[in-house]
Every structure is written in structure tokens, then in C-alpha cells.
Image 1 (spheres, one colour):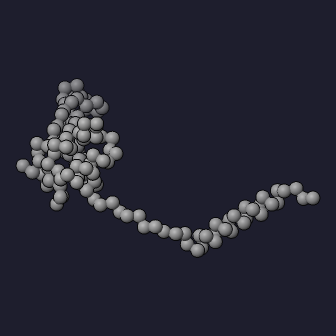
Image 2 (cartoon, one colour; image 1 turned 90 degrees about the vertical axis):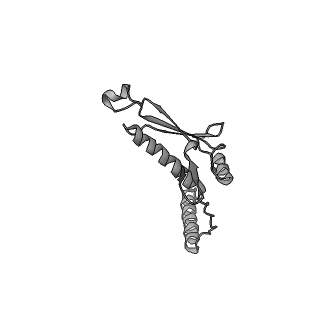
Image 3 (spheres, one colour; image 1 turned 30 degrees about the vertical axis):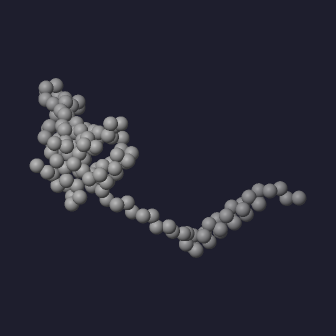
Length: 137
């Protein structure tokens, strides 16, 4: 069943691979017997994403993408395996939405006249202070 994230991004359920392990931290007696930590593995090259989004993902400098092109997202924030699974999936969705948004172009700006004048006044003031430090002959 396809999972629609946005108009351009649709994931297939078989693109996502979940691994479970025991989580450290709070949890009482459950910590030693219940596998609540979730690791989501997402193979970018073999996924159903468009080529453009695959390229954007692989060219991003995200440290969660390993050398084989697999995105690994871990979640162990909750005591519940289901909640950790949802958290990991939402992290993937956030990353895909962020990658697919077009980058804003930087608008070149120049300093205002007032800021230029303040800079010159500051330089003059500093210069006067240094002139007063000199020895007088």
C-alpha cells in the first residue's frame, strides 16, 4: 500500500525495513526483555522515489546515510516500540519534505548609508584614541 507524503513523494511499504532491539534507559523491568528501540533502514537507490529526490538525498551531507546509500534512522525515545516506530517514520517524512523543498535564493544586499557613516565615525574615533597615545615632541 503506497504512503503519500506529499504530491511528489510517494513511498511503498516494502521500501521501509524496521529492526528492533533492546533499548537502554528508563523502562523498569521491561528494559531487559522488551525490544523497544527501532532502527529504520531505507535503501535510497532501490526505493520508489523519483530520481530527482534520490539524487538530492544522496548528495545531502546527512550523516545517517552510509556509504552503500542506505539511510538509517534510529529511535529509542519512548518506552513503546510502536511509538518509536512512529517517531522514526516521522523523522524520515520530515527529511524527505525538507529535501524536496526548493532552496531559497540569496538576495544580495548592500550596507545602508547610515551604517556606512557609523562605521567611518567609529574608525575616526579609534584613530583619535590611538593618536593621543603617541609621544608629543
